[in-house]
Amino acid sequence: MLETLKWTDSGVLFIDQTKLPTEEVWVNCRTYEEVADAIRTMIVRGAPAIGVAAAMGIALGARDQSASGISQFRNGLGQICRLIGETRPTAVNLFWAIRRMQRRFEEVSSRPIPLIKQALIDEAIAIYNEDIATNRAMGAFGAPLLPAEGGILTHCNAGALATAGYGTALGVIRAAVEAGKKLHVFADETRPFLQGARLTAWELMKDNIPVTLISDNMAGWVMKQGKVQAVIVGADRIAANGDTANKIGTYSVAILAKEHGIPMYIAAPFSTVDMDTADGSGIPIEQRASTEVTHLAGKQVAPTGVNVFNPAFDVTPAKYIRAIITERGVATAPFNESLRALAEMKPVAV
Ligand code: MRU
Image (cartoon, rainbow, N blue to C red):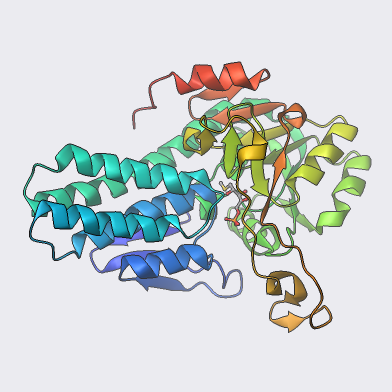
């Protein structure tokens, strides 16, 4: 299985996603500050992978604290969580992971500090392992929704690289292919950061899953020609009513899919569902540097000083979504009710 990140005693290792596909380089983050930088600069990216990275960063920072008393340790942990929480605002998995680590700390806070540190490391590793199991469960729920053969369009990278392994949207595709379905993936290039061209194309080719790369503006025409039977993407945050934030461009794909009568599926772990946010208008959208738009692979492609708008995500209204595939089951409209029912279920045991 393709690996994205791992815990080691000397630090958290990440495959550097800014260098793929031309260089396969691993980066060792030895401090929590370095982990925070890796998230901010997108060495690691994708909502579930960001969550796992955050948990490991917190465990690393906690392990290296020199605090002798519990209140000093608690303050230090608060500072670590604050810094990691300031890295990227949209993917709710980041905040989910921080809360889970804080909860674990409270559960074990009466133990001696070395045991607290070990409990936090164990929790981060559990989050990593659960993410892989979660993706496999989503694959099992989602694969039957895909056709026995045909074209599947995806946007951005919701694959192994965006998770601890296997992937969400690409995990469903992997599971369908493992079940014998004859699928061909159309990967949107995904400007400006090119996650589709650089990452999705790379990881599907590694797995021998047929993939054709298209630039984002080709999606409608490819659909018009009958080449796409389903769209499946991941998510960064899903509001309680099913409105879904995902990589910029997903909204346009959803409208195109609707126009062509093609079902649009979202695959995401339940940690991406934010039941505290009623609808998409409450989801914060990250704005990124203008150079991501004015430059391509380091080369300037726009006039110096041009105004740029660079939102990293958009929100697809729930009405465009056929189903949301999670590890707890598949939610369909009305999403307020189906997501609430899944929220009340016990988390899947790994
Ligand atoms: O900016 P990124 O690359 O972190 O954005 C990633 C996406 O939008 C993914 O589609 C989403 O996180 C789901 S990943 C399983």
